[in-house]
Image (cartoon, rainbow, N blue to C red; front, side, top):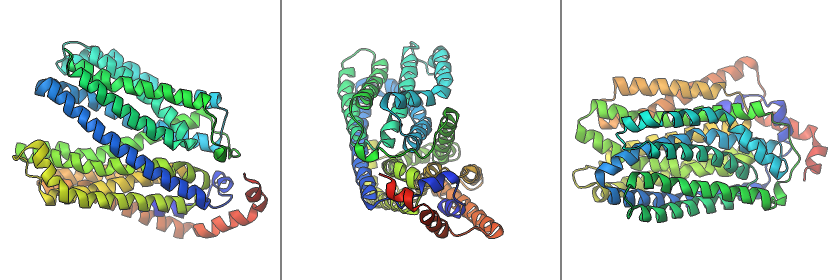
Amino acid sequence: MLGWWMSCQPLSAETELAAEGKAPTSELRQAASAGVLLVVAGGVAGILNFLFNVVVARAGGVGAYGAIGPLLMLCAVAGLLVTGVQYGVARATVLAPKPARESVRMAFRAVLPWALPTVILGLLAVPIASFLKLSSPLPVLIVTLLSATCVAGAALTGLLIGLRRFRVIAGVVIGSALLRLGLGFLVGHGRDVVTGSILASTLPLVAGVLFYLVVLLHWPRSPDISRLAIRKVEPVELQRTGIVGALIAGAMWTIWGVPVLFARHALSPAEAGDFAASQLLAGGIIWVTAPLVTAFYPTIVRHRYKSPIAIGAIGTLGIALLGLVALTEVAPLLIHKLYGSHFSGSRVLLLVLALSATATACGTYACWAALARSRSMRPVVAFLGLALLLELGWDGLVGHTESALAAGPLSALAVSGGLVGAAALISRILTGALPPEAIEQSSVSLLPSQVSSDP
C-alpha cells in the first residue's frame, strides 16, 4: 500500500532529471547479485555473532551475561538508529559523486548531529553502570566508543553503498564477525568477561572503519559508477535525511519489539519466555531480508523507476516467505535444543510471528524505497505513526494471548498501509494526477539527448 502511495505522487524536478532512462538491465542484474552476496554475508556473520554470544555466555556464566546483554543492546540500538546516516550518505553519493577525500569529508559531516548523543552517553557512564550493577563504568565507556564507531562506520558504509562497492562491504561484515568470535575465545580466558566482551565487539568495528578508509582513499572507484551528478546535496539536507532515516528505523524496530514488553506484562512468566524465544528467532526474517534494500538502494536513487523497486520488493517477500516456512518447520526443534525442553516452541505462535516479521520486512523495505525516491515523507510518517498507535492499541486491548500479541505488527502494518493507500487513491482522484507511466514516458521523450549522452 505504501508503494501504491509512492506511485500516485507526481515526479519532482529531481526525479525527472534522474529518470533519464530506465535502469539498465545489467544494473538490475548487478543489484540482484549484490543482494544475494549481502544476504549470504549477513547470514554467515549472523551465525558467527550467535556463536560469539554462546562463547561469552559460557565463559562468564549467567550473572556476567546478564550484564553483557543490556550493554550489547545499547550498541544494537545505536547501530540501528545510524542506519539513516548510512542511507543518507549513500543517496548523496549517488546524486552528487565527488572525489574520494571530499566524499569522506561529506560523510563525516553527516554524523555531526550524532556527536551530542554520544557525548551524553559517555557522561552518563557512571549512573548507567550503577543502574546495571557493574563494578566499573569502563564497559559503558567502551560502549560509548563502540557507538561512535558505529556512527563513523555507517557513514563510510553509505559511501561504499553509493559507489556500489558491495564486495568490500560483504568482506568486512564477515571479517569483523570472524575477528569478534576469535576475540571472544580469548575473553573466555580473561578475568573480566563483561569488559572483555564489549571490547571484543568494539575492536572489529574499529578495524572495519580503518579498512573502509583505506579502500575509499586508496582504491580507485569502479568506472561504471562515475556518472554525471544529478544535483547538489546540501549538508543540511544530508543531515535531515539521516534523522528521517533514524525515525524510520526506530519506528519499525518499536513496532516489532513492543509485543515482547506486553507479553511480559500480560502473560504468565512461562508464556512470556516462550514468546520472547520465538520472537527472537522470527526476527531473523527481518534481519536476513535487510541487505536487499542495501543492494537496490543506489539504483532506486538514480532511476526512480518501478522496476528496481519491484524486483527488490519481490526478493524481500520471497526470502521472507522462505524464512517463514523454515521457521515453522525447524524452529520448534531448535528452541528445544537451544533453550531446553521447558520451552514449548508452538508452531502456531511461530507462524503468526513469521507473518508479522514478513509484514515488518516489507514495510521497512517500502519506507527505505520512499526515502530513496526522495518523495514527500509525509505519507511515510503517517504510515509509521498510525501503525505505532494501532500496535499499542491492539496490544493493550486485544493482546491477552500469545497469538494475539504475535499478530500485532501484522495487523497494525496492514491496516495502516491500507489507510495510507486509500488516502493516496483519493488524493490522486481529487488532484487528477496523471498515471506514473505517462509521466515516465513523457520525461523520457522530452530528454532524448540526455539519455544518449549519459555514460
